[in-house]
Image 1: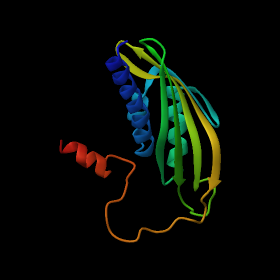
Image 2 (image 1 turned 90 degrees about the horizontal axis):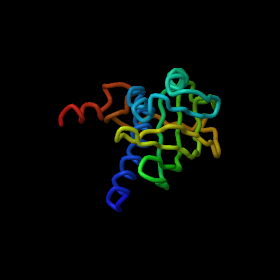
Image 3 (image 1 turned 90 degrees about the vertical axis):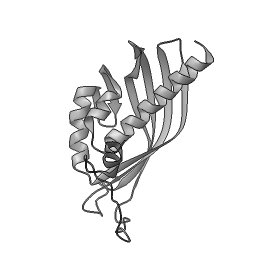
Image 4 (image 1 turned 30 degrees about the vertical axis):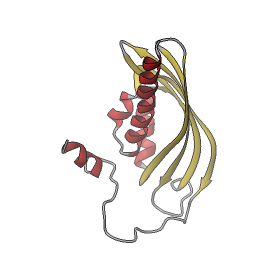
Length: 168
C-alpha cells in the first residue's frame, strides 16, 4: 500500500466509527448496520452476538433512554496489509432519561472500541467489535433543564441534522 492509500484507508475507517456513533445517538439503526459487515460480531457489556442480534438488543436499550451522546477522542488505526486493520478508539458516552434520578438511565461511561476492520469488495466495515467499558459513573439527579429556546436534538428524522442533510 502507498502512503496515500494508507491515509485513505484510515480516513474511511475513522468515518465508520463516527457513522456508528451518529446512528446510535439518532436511533438510526440502518446507519449503525452500515458500519458493520453483514456477518459482523459485536461484544458489548451485557451482549455478545451478530450485528442483527445487536440491533435488536441495542434498540430495546436505547428506547428506555431519553438520549445518548457518544464522544470519541484518541484513535489509533493499525493497517495489516490491504484488507485488515485494527482500530482502537477511546470515547465517552453520556446517557439520560426519565426519571432523572434513576442511575440506570442517567450515567456516563468511558469506553474503548476495539475494532477488527476488514475491507471486502473495496468496502471497509467492522468485522468484530469489542466495546470495552473502562468506567461508569452515575449522573442521576444532575441534569438541568434547557435554559432557553433553541434547537433540540431528536432521535429520529426530525433532528436538525436530517434537515441540514435534506438541503444539500
